[in-house]
Length: 158
Image (tube, rainbow, N blue to C red; front, top):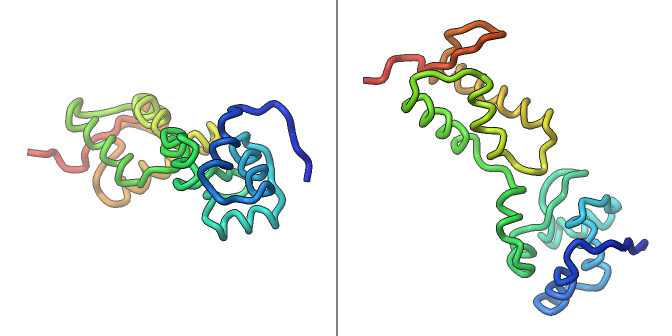
């Protein structure tokens, strides 16, 4: 195993050692996950089986139990995705308050709320997918054009 320098948080490894019964190999692998460095497939399977990491390759992040042991709970919440219902509620709240929204307004609303693990392209795709899903379910319509969207409720709320 290769040990990389430049520790992001020196207390991180100490906390893992003190609060868990993990092997040194597991601690080094979790340190790599925290630093967003790749880990080998065998170690990823082991950490996943032990419920120490979550996410999809290559975007692994530490699990809630590790985040709790290392006092990185806020980071855990920022990296794990929220449900589509959470994001849809943000859109419907916005439309209730303001009546309509352009795509850029919805991007401004939703992009900062999406998981930090996603790339900017993945975030844009996620917003597009959410709006399409809401449109297909009959909740919202695009009253504008493709280039100048204007999202509104499908039926006027009374």
